[in-house]
Amino acid sequence: MQEVQELQRIIDAYDNIVFFGGAGVSTESGIPDFRSTDGLYNQEYDYPPETILSHTFFVRNPEEFYRFYRAKMLCLDAEPNAAHKKLAELEAAGKLKAVVTQNIDGLHQKAGSKKVLELHGSVHRNFCTKCHAFYDAEYMLHTTGVARCSRCGGIIKPDVVLYEECLDDAVISESIDAITRAQVMIVGGTSLVVYPAAGLLQYFRGEKLIVINKGATSADRNADLVIQQPIGEVLSKIRTGEAK
Image (cartoon, rainbow, N blue to C red):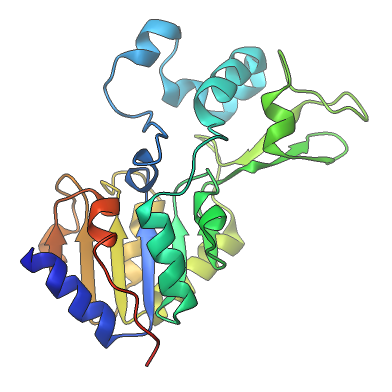
């Protein structure tokens, strides 16, 4: 494929690349994009995912929140796919400087990536709302009803950014810094409709913008290279070179 050859050429030529990714990076690992119209949630839940995953709903109806959270968000058996693994290889080779992700599944770290900026938090971090005790995802998976702290009985809240909540200032700042410094930015597996995360692209001032996504995105018109294919399929064809 000519587009993949061009992607390879760009990766070979630069050593300050930042990757910005979304749900499409993890769908090839079997993690569903809950925004997809598969009808599953409408059949099983009385509320749409966007309502359940809101701060208001968590406070008012934590039991229903946790029923959804355990069933749909804690995909702990998922393994990194070709996209996660290739990005980790590119970082190890000195090419990739950061992964900025909207995903909360921790698969980038599981694949070996070190510099991962999680815009929406992670299911692997959970804290008691009273005493701030830490709980991992495995603990949360095996709770029932409302997840409560074993120390003080307080409600445990996942360290994920729910609707109505603000993104972490430190993560945003670090992401902006990485994107501003990047020579190349690869946007992959995201339709760029979730804000404020998608707005970070405005900080890119580098030389090459690449978009890899199965569907069209708002960044396509400004991109130097657009590949409308699954991100894992594309990156699996890339050879990992050494940093210049």
